[in-house]
Length: 430
Image 1 (spheres, rainbow, N blue to C red):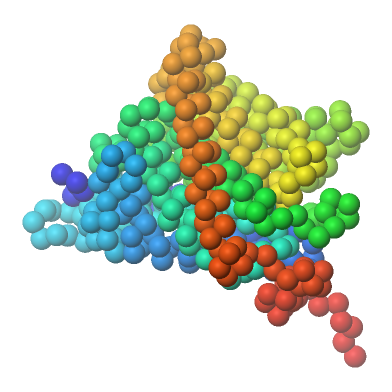
Image 2 (image 1 turned 60 degrees about the horizontal axis):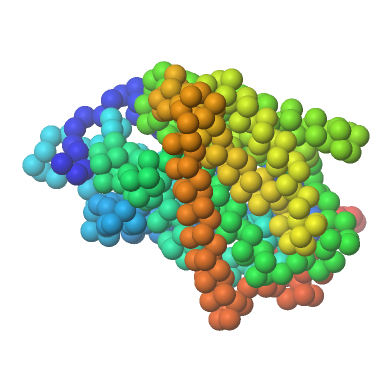
C-alpha cells in the first residue's frame, strides 16, 4: 500500500520532531554565517536571500513539490503530481484504514516537513555565490524555479524513505545503488554546481578581485558555523528516521568529520600562510560537515575522521582557485560545498566499511571499485544536470526581468538600494 497507514512510534516521532526543528534552524544559521562574510552594506540583502528560501520552498513543497519528489516514480526520473497534491494522503485518516499515513514509523506529515528543510537550505546555499550584486526580485524568481526544476528531480533520484522511494525510487538510489545518505548530491553538489553557473552568468563584483572585500563580522561567521554544526545533527542523524543505534553512529560521525576538517583546514593555513584564522576554522567545520553528509551512514568513526581531514585540506586549497580562474564565487560555495560534497561522495567508495550502518565495503576495506564507480556516476550525473538546467533558468531570467542589480546600487550598497534599509545606523543622535 502506498502510502501505508498505522500508529506512529512515539520515540521515533519525538526524535524526528526535534530533528525537523534542527534542520529548519540551519537556514537562519546559514543567513548568519553568510551575513557575517559579506560587507556591511550587503548584510541585510544576504540574510534576506537566505531566509526567503523558507517561504518560497514551503509553498512549492505543499502545493506539488513534495509529490514530485516523493510520489510514485516515473521512469526513475520524477515522482507523480497525483500522489500527494496539496499534501493529500500525508495526514489524517482516509476512513478505510486505521491510523494515519506513515513514512516508516513516523507521521508522513512530519517527514514532509523534515524534507522541506533540506530543500530550503539547499536553495539558500546558492545565494553565497552571488552576494552583493543580484537583484532581489530576480533571486526570488530564480529560487522558485530552481527548486522545481533542479532540486526536486535530483531529490527524487537520490533520497530513499520506507514506504515511499525505498520501493518506488529514482534511478540513483533505485537502480545505480549509489550511496548518498543525507544529500551530498541533492544538497551540496547540486547547489555548488548551480552556484558556479549563476555566478558566471551574473559576472564579477565591481572591483573584484583587486579591491579587498573582507568579512564585516567574523563573530557572526563563527556563530553561524556553530549553529550549522548543531543543526547538522538533525540533518544527518534525522535522516535515519528513527531513534536507534544507527542514528547514534551517524551523529558521532557528524561530530568527528567536522572536528577533523577544522583541524586539517587550520594546519593547511598554518603551513601556507603562517597563521590559523577564525574564518578558516569556521569554513573548515562546514567543509567536514558537507563531506560527511553523504557518507555518514557508510563509514566508521575513524573513517569519518579521514573524510573530514581530506575535505578540510582539499577545500582549503580549492577556495583559492577562484582567483586563478577568475570566477567570483563570493562566499566560496564552490570551494566548500561543491568540492567537499564531491569528496564526501567519492570517499564512500574508498573508506566505506561493512561494519557501518550502510553495510558496504569500499576499496580500502576490500570492496574493490564496485561502490566507487557508482559514486562517480552519481556525482557526474548531478553535476551535468544541475549545470545545464541552472544555465537555462539563469539565462531565461537574464533576458527577461534581468539578473544583476544596477552598478550604482552595488557601489552605494545593495541593502539600501534593494530594501531601503541599513544593517547598522552610525548616525550620532543629538
